[in-house]
Length: 107
Length: 116
Image 1 (spheres, chains in turn orange, yellow):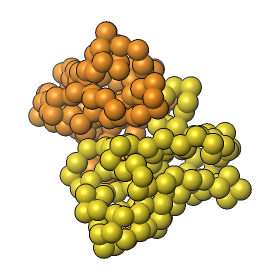
Image 2 (cartoon, rainbow over the protein chains, first blue to last red; image 1 turned 180 degrees about the vertical axis):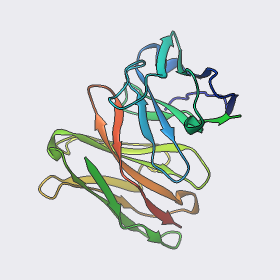
Image 3 (spheres, each protein chain N blue to C red; image 1 turned 30 degrees about the vertical axis):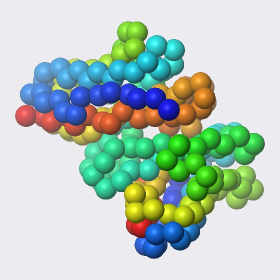
């Protein structure tokens, strides 16, 4: 098993940029994904392979990677972006892990 | 793509329960499938994965030896047999389709609630 570390919360004003880091040793050799979860809903895939966006995901969501840290960036935050965000990766022993989640609050 | 979980409910500690996930809208036997759970007010926890043909299965340490993942490709269904349930197993159990190419959980069901 392994750990992925995220900040518990991030606050941002509408139109500003939110950055959510996720760190873990496994990220140096494996891709990460990001999920958005709104209250009462299942998670939704936002980013895969560190920086790829599935179809239908707004362009303001982007991902980046450097060493053992990946970052989800939300540019021009909208009120509807208020949600919990989770990073996820997989290790070589086929163990899958999620970060503890970051609550994004739009002020 | 549609994933519909069922079988959740209230069960006493030490008892067993099996939850199911019926899949549609894609070629089921071409994809690995996963179970992920979320305790009330908590984050996501990976539970188990099964390969496309069912030959490989991997489990989280927290449930290893108590839970078994299986699938029936003729019924487009994946199962999670949960034995010796504990209070801490109380959670919403999601099934998800896994993309081996990208390492992500592409599609998720709405979940089924298990209360121990």
